[in-house]
Length: 378
Image (cartoon, rainbow, N blue to C red; front, side, top):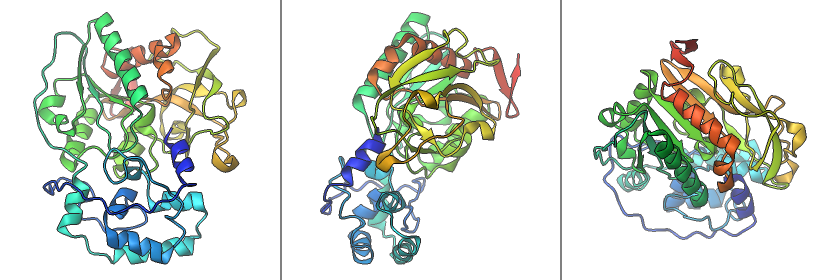
């Protein structure tokens, strides 16, 4: 998905002009509001500040020259919100000393009130109450994005979840506002489904509300792009809730048939899917297997059934290659599936079964529950 687009953009010319930003009131709850500029800042923030952009061009003339006119530019949703100079440098083979030199220069730049306004414009805090229809379990389908937005995937997933809810009598509410993530709203829901969410989307107050909700017994379901960004300013989300960091996906070709090996376990998720499941999708690789961090793997890829090679023949083999798993976070239940770039995946009968049973488990209706960070029976 975004891996392919970023790589393609590296062959184009940037010359991105200063774009005026509609100033939003700089909220004290905005992440990175006063953070120093650095090589790990979102690329969008570097491009929004002329002095920062000029400093990079002066210190490393070739670094931004081949990035290209990125879709969205400095207006979210955009790939620039989920990339950093370190990300770009990895594609360009910039040396560590050169990268550290530009980092030192960036850290000396002042963070002005206008810089803070520009950073905070990506967030919202409209705390509108959500009205639930009748039905159980009660589910929030969350669709705010500041990074990469793949419209067809988002729409196909939403249609699939709405169809499940209608067929099973679930109560489902859709929101694309970070302001929906409040303690009062969250306490109404058994689980929150993140539909291909990309980018840093929650303020500090919203992050705290969501983390507290999960740890105290709420459910999380994330699909595909919800764990497919290059950078994650919110470490709890990437390292605790998901438990794995995205590194890329194949490009030779991007979409391939692969064999999925099921490991249903005690949760029952995926237990009704016939063995020998093969489907075509964009297959994510991660820095390390989440199994090492205590995840319960539900499905893994047979790496011999497809070609895990990325841009520049990058080897994306993991050995142990989970593609869907659960985690217990306190009393909360987390399920993530990396499947779901192609809209067709959401109508695949096997994947529909996997998602349906995962949602029920995350909503507290499965064969196991979570207690003190461990999966236990009822």
